[in-house]
Amino acid sequence: MAGHTENTIVISAPMDLVWSMTNDVESWPELFDEYAKTEVLHRSGDTVRFRLTMHPDENGNAWSWVSERTADPRTRTVQAHRVETGWFEYMNLRWEYREVPDGVEMRWIQDFRMKPDSP
Image (cartoon, rainbow, N blue to C red; front, side, top):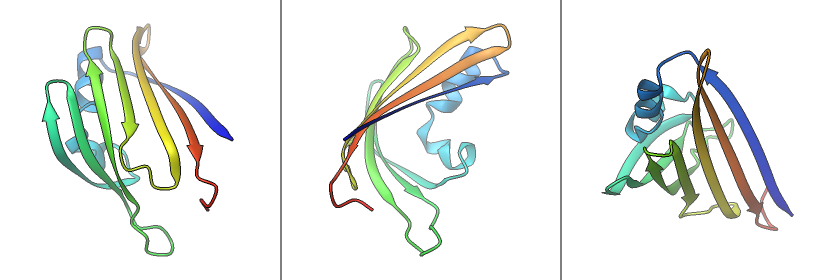
């Protein structure tokens, strides 16, 4: 069965700041509390391939995977997918940014399918 999630948040900051901070994958461990480490594996233009590692869970597992994302500064969108899918058959993401009266609305959409043997 395919999964689909959509989330939105309004960030009270200018577009350029929100765009640069949320697309600086090296700083994600400071920006998002669930991530322990980011390692950039390859960068080409607006595309970055990186390994993301989470903080250990209650069983001591520090889940990790490789993702690739391409930011389009002109349209203020990002397309991403997992290269190492782990428990997923696939995981595709889209981030969209738009200015709103209170700041920047950041919307992220995930489409995925879990592998049959995933927990």
